[in-house]
Length: 359
Image (cartoon, rainbow, N blue to C red; front, side):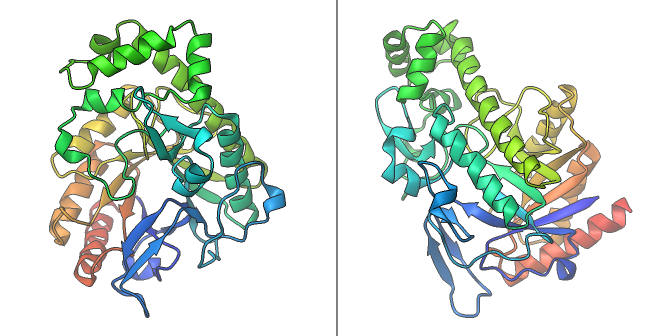
């Protein structure tokens, strides 16, 4: 059983003290406002999207990340947590590379993988992080972003959109996507109209909403995402990265941190499966991956020790062991830096319980 603990660049996390095997440190990250309960000088930090490494503009193409402090060091010992298509700073400066929904609304935080410049940026990102010494990476947002991942001061919950509504509002109509959809034989104006009519109409499925066009939309998205992953993996491997994990979902319409997958992906060593809920939903997701035989060398479960999960070691351990029993070989624990001292103590004890039960 391998256990990784997530942290931000400003967090001082001792993996040995917690009993973890590895710290996964945010190296390229989206904008965040974070509590820092043990920071020597702060209790709250606000950081815009950027790269926590020196940035040489000559090493980049059209899209260049902002350099942020503190600079991450010791990447040979830690895994690099790399957020790829979620960057509101680049999106603000380059709206033409961002996702747009069927109503024309811009998702400034969402870089669209159909845009060649976005794929080039993602490949450059992993190359530069690898050159800084990273030999292990965890990829987040390795595909399209959608409606449902936080932007600015989020005020969307009260619309009561269903999962189908959110998927509809996550279909991208940027210039690159509309060209790709048209090249695939779709009438893009007709498709936009269909999406607009379907949002809020109570459709039972994407096929119910869009008919046979739903499959074509998915195929276009899959091709763009596959191109993104191929370029990212090639850049990482060419620069010495030995181990690549990717946050992934079996839901074909998934967007956001966990990208949709429907086959084993060459070059990806592990899928990290969202498994935060205490309801058994994470166990079912693991079972779905196993049923689809989407198994690289390992499956990992992405779990949290933050609210609404209680700060109780026995609750954490019971949940984590249920995922181990379901077939995961790793636990990725979110988030050591955001956790109160009581929650950090619960993480430490829960890890010890899991170790005792699995070794």
